[in-house]
Amino acid sequence: MLRLFKTAIALLLVPVMTTGCWDIKHVQDINYVAAIGVDYANGTYDVYVQLLDFSSVAKMESSKPTAPVPAWVGKGSGDNPIHALDDLYQSSQLRIFYGQVNAVVLSERLLKEGIEDYEELLRRNFEIRYTPWVFGTSLPIDQLFSISAFFNLSPLVTLLHQPRESYKQNSVIAPISMREFYASYREPCKTTQLPSLTINDQYWMRDKKEHAVLQINDMYVLQRQTFKGWIDKDRIDGLRWVDPRTSRAPLVIQSKNNAQVGIALESPKVKINVNTSSDAVSFEVDVKLEGQILDNNISIPEHEIEQEAIERVRSEIVQTYKEGLKSKSDLLQLEHTLYRKKNREWKMLQERNGVVLKPDSLADVRVDVKLNNSGKIKN
Image (cartoon, rainbow, N blue to C red; front, side, top):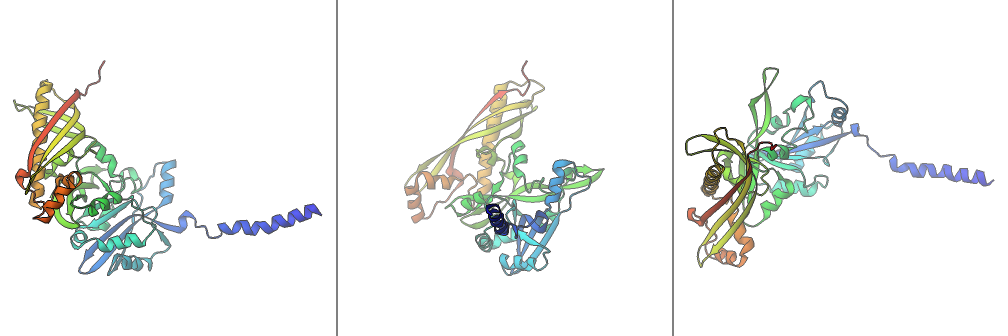
């Protein structure tokens, strides 16, 4: 009798314990969004999504794909980004899930118009986290989302989803996460530096045919939640010397006898000193860099290479500062340093005419370069 009673209890518990599994969705029954792009034109928002095929990712772990992994790109339109996604849902074959979003692309037209409506999308959609990488672009977003990776790998193995790996080898414009983007965007007097994404087919070939890849070519600048413009990365080389995130920055310098030497500098230590008076402010920038010699075939003395590197780094920092003044932006974050270090003086200047940066506001740039080794393996 007791055994029968236990059996009955067990049978009664079975449906209770299995109800929690009834609504489970399998991986293949959900559309996973890997990237979101937002464009704006003539009062209409276009939202693009790049879908992730988890089955292709699983296959990559077991064996190398023999055919290119297709990129699925969807587009919806509406009078705001939320309505644009609602428009996209009409044609979606399965439920769309945003918990795997790893990249966000904002068009140049949207940056000029303002990103308030996109912020509303983030606040309304709890699935989207603040961890994705953020980019700007002037190209059609669907073209960016359709670029294939090397070796038939998943689109996840591209610069769109893994910008940090390339930055570690050649640090010019630092990748920025959504959390960092909005922290900078909302911070008083801080300049937001947004990498610009483009397509380049001049570097790589596949089976003797040009192969297009993604590339960070330039930078968008926003300050006080206002679009300031677009700057070519060749004109802002000095940014890498004042950014502590710089992992490795190759530099070709020319010696006194016109010979070229390649070095790589890394891990800058930056200190900005602020000097204030009743109606003006000036800044002094101290930068310390370490590095190594990559090639020195004619045996130029190390101290001479260091001195030439110091002059080159100083020149690039000053040039970058002046380039920012052209667009009325503070690329070296000098005013933000004043805001943090001497907030009372910053408020006093704000109550008058505000903090107006001039060419001579950057009073001095002091650079120290120490080359630790010649880049050769020691016996």
